Image (cartoon, rainbow, N blue to C red; front, side, top):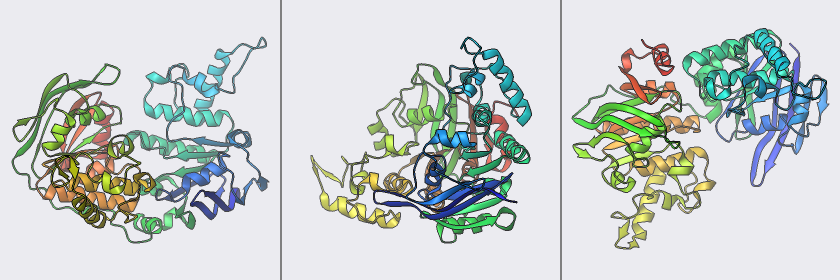
Length: 503
């Protein structure tokens, strides 16, 4: 099979960072080629060079045998290279058809938008590639899985022959993921060539033909998917053997620790986001919350941590009512919080590692003595946690913004876990984190459970929920629709509940 695309010895530098170092990559016609690597490995940079967003310092790009000089995304699109970004770029108030033709509109002889012809062409394109969409539906009214199809159709409408799919399963239910696999296979059969960027190794093995691994900006190797495995790919990505299965013993729940009853709250637009949510968690137990993002999980965590006011309900920790208390009071009641957005709620990026390791606890002993800091205790605390949680660089005075995403997350996990909480709320604890750091963070969460802590785990990663939880609550449109023992939970059952169905 001939290569339709070749990137040879691509080198891209940023101030102080060698993002791509002599990287080689090729794509064959009709192939699904996975591109994997840890955060900062250079995947996105390489694709941004291909799509014309960045210009390389060294190396060549060949497309259909011809060397290219791609000055921008418009050049890439004109050549037949399309990119579907992880965060969809759609206008919610426009229809599916209007979004697809946006920037490449069909007009009548008088120069008016010919929406009737556009709708017809989008419907024909949808039928041709098996991408079931309603051309007349507004984006704001369709599910996220259909939004992704619209993004793919946008590229196909512009006659893309190469499709770059950047983390395409991040917001999909298991059923929608399987539908995407079918779409990718069908597109490949039609002669389209697909570059599939993901961090989920089981997806790589399920759908790709070949896999290229990047590490520290370099090409580590390209292997045929049928000839590799998750452990081998993980070791290529990290440079060492990685424990992919969570090592945990059966839970030994103790006394009831957390009780939440009839909890309701509004979102930022004043619309009800939580509707009579009730659950309980015992000491030494992890309750996982599964659901497609945007179904009330964020608001639930914000209410329980004092960041959002509830309209009704109860929230007790070991008999102490905490509902609508301040965030400081709740934290002082031994509730730890790993927030879903580490930059917004977890860190002060221009503070040092040392300072970030006491945020929220800075006014407590032994860090504070009246209005003064105990600097000897701050330094001791920082050095102990930097060592225990393997935070890199091992410089307590390094600014948080200088750390990788995985090490930023380790700072938050270290801070919250070190304060001996009775109730741990971990929201998206491994989002954007390298596979090696995921292994470490998962083990720390299990350690908290085994020490008798009550844990609420909220994650968009179904595999994370299923491997860490003892029970799983499924949220849909602001309600808990079911709570399952982990032994009876399957991806199919959870996916059905996450989409509003019943089992």
